[in-house]
Image (cartoon, rainbow, N blue to C red; front, side):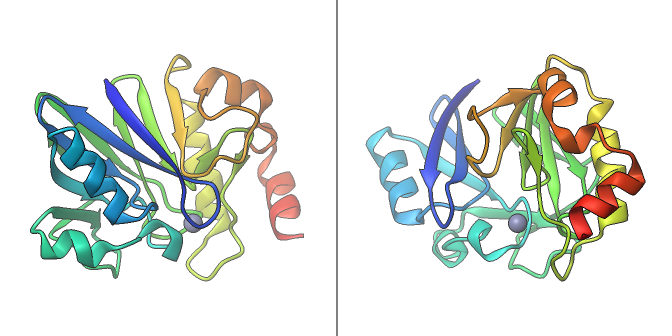
Length: 198
Ligand SMILES: [Zn+2]
């Protein structure tokens, strides 16, 4: 899989541009559209879709720009952001011969999703390298976050994790390493609630 990672945005965000031949799909629009589109143009890529991973302000950057260019915007069905395609659990987003499976992973935010393509999991603010998203915001649900993290723990260990922010010691990780080293994946339900909510 060919991935161009953009790092920056509001707070060390990651946006991932997946390339397939002359087409591209943007996962997590957290980086200025102008620069994403310039990269696509320079590399003769047609941006065919933008996937909103959850609706926090730093992850829905310049959606209007994509809308005006008739680039398909995907977001979870519960999301209030503008979208062309409402997606939910078990839906598939296609780029060439690549199928990205949608997982609805509420907790950090009600409309949080993860995308799984073979051994690649894009987690946005659901799971970070050695961390996880906050659950004390409006639209968060700590109980659902525990269920979501539990679900992620049961994915295959050799899957690579691509988070939505550069908060950890490495840019990406694996399910195996996170199960071993991420404190939030070690906690009991009670410990998690106490730690995350004080
Ligand atoms: Zn967020």
